[in-house]
Image (cartoon, rainbow, N blue to C red; front, top):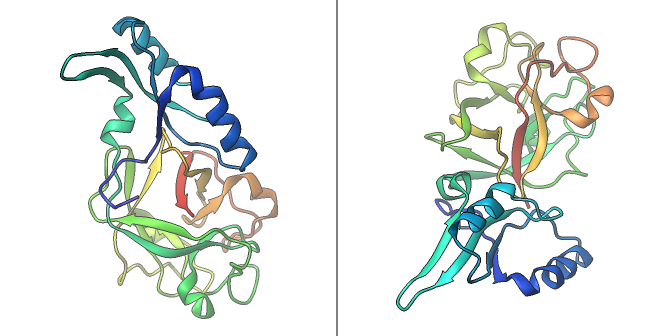
Length: 229
């Protein structure tokens, strides 16, 4: 996907949706948006179909309900229309030791609260949007130049860095992270830790390590989504 574009999807007729989704599932591909053509159902029914949005792991973001002489008539999901990608930085990784997000291209300079450097060998390659936060994203997330981790910048003064003291975001972009309605294809359930103010993978919280002691605590956090490939 080019930066500044919507998350791509598949356009097909309603009669072929099942076979297309079956083929995607067989290939291990999920969270692909669908734009479905079913002429003659009427605008109200198309709106209802998009509002329902379900599709067995393949969200419906658009429904084409009429074929006109010069144009077609469609209903689309507003979040899908308004959420576009911004400039992004590749090279971010999940640490399988502490469960945190860190900048993998500086892994040798990182500090993990579980000891040594962060471990990203089992990670996806994540990308972080930076600059002006798009609609549905929370801005002001920062890279720490000391530990290489990702933390919430407005809470820097009360943060805890595994390299000692507070996180240092002085050389960082302002990153933006999706929350609430997670874009299709993103990995959900990333959390903010209320103890250290870093970002960690919530489903693995019991195996996490927090620089403030014990495990991370995501109580009160948004459900964040991370783009990966």
